[in-house]
Amino acid sequence: GAVVSQHPSRVICKSGTSVKIECRSLDFQATTMFWYRQFPKQSLMLMATSNEGSKATYEQGVEKDKFLINHASLTLSTLTVTSAHPEDSSFYICSAVRLAGGRSTDTQYFGPGTRLTVL
Amino acid sequence: AQKITQTQPGMFVQEKEAVTLDCTYDTSDQSYGLFWYKQPSSGEMIFLIYQGSYDEQNATEGRYSLNFQKARKSANLVISASQLGDSAMYFCAMRDLEYGNKLVFGAGTILRVKS
Image (cartoon, rainbow over all chains, first blue to last red; front, side):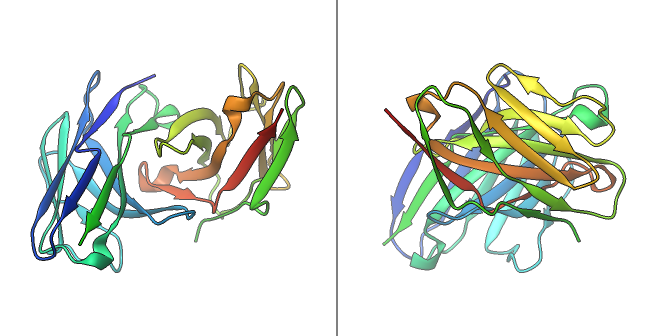
């Protein structure tokens, strides 16, 4: 299957600092990437859609000034958690869409996730 | 609005036996896709299997098969010959082809394989 990487895998930071998480599709180009947030023992919650060359589309209730998304190239999207606070502590997962020629078979491949702990 | 329901918070299965994880969905659209992902304790989401709404045959991938019953709006995952490494959280997800590639996830089912 396709490979998506995330960096860092784990980060601990002080309250008030900003944290950048990178998501890379290693063996395919992705015009669309997604960022999810997951709390322990819960499902994935979509935060935003990252589109290469254009602004991200945020889901309702997600602060776009808090969670900055930049899709700089066809293989890289970054999520920056600005002025992080303890309530931002969570597991953040990205995914990249690999196009299969027919829209019905396009598949999302997920990165390994980043565990953010804000002290 | 789309909705995915996984009614089994947790399941146990004996090693080498088959297990079915339930998934029902709700959508008013005719064109959609259904996915199953596995999430082990490491956190990574592993794609298992896909079923398109217009696919006439049930999808199969190795030990995984999807029991797709369109009229009942169910897309159950069947894992045959369970292995200890199958212990994980399993998520059913649906994609509405009219809205690009956004996925809606179910709450998940934790599967534990007993030796």
